[in-house]
Length: 294
Image (cartoon, rainbow, N blue to C red; front, top):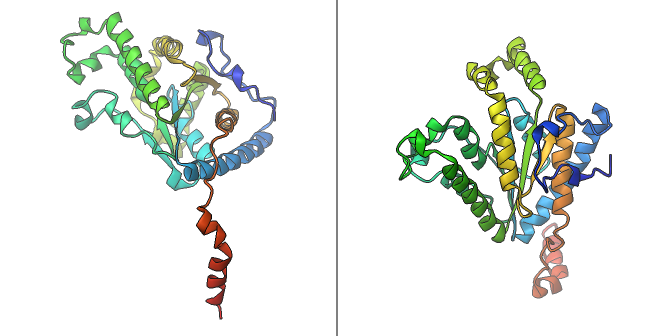
């Protein structure tokens, strides 16, 4: 398991989601996966400290998946070792009135990571070619010039939106944002089991919404939209990774391992050298502090 082939999960050519596995436990039991995750997340935390000191890159982690795919728990477990001040999580829900008064990418742009920090998008700008494509009537609420009725939300409209998203990601990548996009690939049967657990376990009841069942009936449409979005927007500077999500522990290990392996390739991320004058006087500063004990 120490040699996970992360290229197996990265999208470098057109894919069909129906041909991708939703279950992969990496050949390990729960205890081994937990240990692996702990080791990887500690290394991620060390990298984050150096990234912060270096101060030239921000890291954007995008998580997409069907309801119950495990996004929330993945964020909790993968990033818990990192300094809380260096990680900001953004959950994008139905746009607010303020957000609708801007273009659809605005709320995502202002949530991008500062240099030296991580931003995690729990659902992302891709909702604008997923949920809105399954429910195109939502687009009418965006007050876009030239879009007056549902017939205006056509193939050309979606192609333009894919182009805009690609342009957005290219721009931020060229200005120091390292982009990682993960699709948590869940099976329909596993979603059914997880929804049942929300109904059966009292402590999980609050997570259930009748809308979950309505959206589940549109499963095939969502899968088609995900497949198209992934194929049109997986680029070398902003690759998609398809993560089998039926086993939550393995999915967390995969996401953490992919992040760590890719980030370690940025050899220029180093702690800055001390100013020569400060370095030359370190012993003096140390003596000054030690004298305070006297």
